[in-house]
Image (cartoon, rainbow, N blue to C red):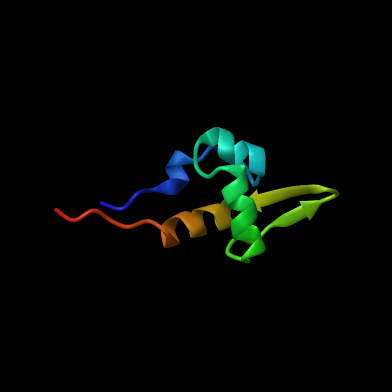
Length: 69
């Protein structure tokens, strides 16, 4: 069974790093490491870093290992 992240994530276009952490997905420190390694695409608005919903879903799907029965 494949996880449907589109249904799980709150409806928003952009998420701040803090919001992603509050949802319980990825800690801010880990996201900063992924951004530095260019594994997450970001959008900067002023000094704030945001991640798009599409990018977050792409990353989660890429790094999800499906369970076998």
